[in-house]
Image 1 (cartoon, rainbow, N blue to C red):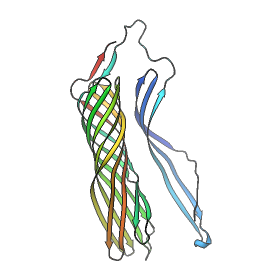
Image 2: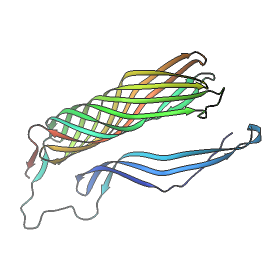
Image 3: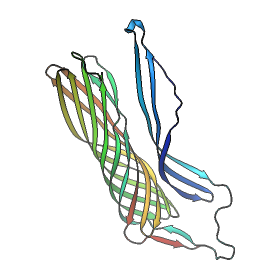
Image 4: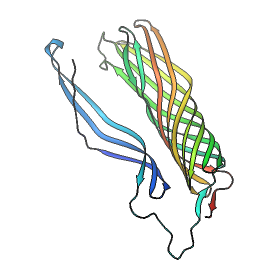
Length: 303
């Protein structure tokens, strides 16, 4: 039995980003948007062959969007007054060590397969929440090319609970699966292109994180819960824009895709029988931050 519904919704959005000049009238940007389209409620009529009656499904509609883009601005590029001397090109010296902090949002999409009574019961667990932390790194600049190393540590508030058969009934099995990402760390290389006071870069390397999973099974009045905690190692890749603010300060906006492999959990509980849950561990992180670079900051290249 299958039902399909289509809804057009109106809501609101908020976000932020960084836009930097490339050359002439061209600019590039990285931005994040949170979108809230309210909620939808749909009623399905159940055929008599399946017991008859109706079923109501209600869902919130929330979305986290990270995107990059380029813009072309019409009109002449900004120029100095006619009486001014030929301007100097303000660039930024990216070479040196830096420290900084960041805040953002993470959304995971963890496909899972449960084997209990019936095999291959497919689930999706999607922990999401605020992330925040600190980073430290070092850059080497040769002409417009910037090579760097960066490490960061993030506290994570990502969490999700999914429930199967969520109306506990005497003699009926109800299952709850909760997954949390407690912390996340990366050790990455960076390869960038410096355009004046802006740095466009790609990044990738190793990723580390702690995953906490809780499996709860209920057949009222029985209620049994098992907790798991795993430290995982994987990889990450992403990119972003960093722009000079003033002095030795810069701001950045970046996206990271994180793959921490998979995890397998086996539970044998009296009264419930054996349960195996295999889940992927994938995360999408968008964040903004500021850095302070030690040593010289802006440099002026005359032409």
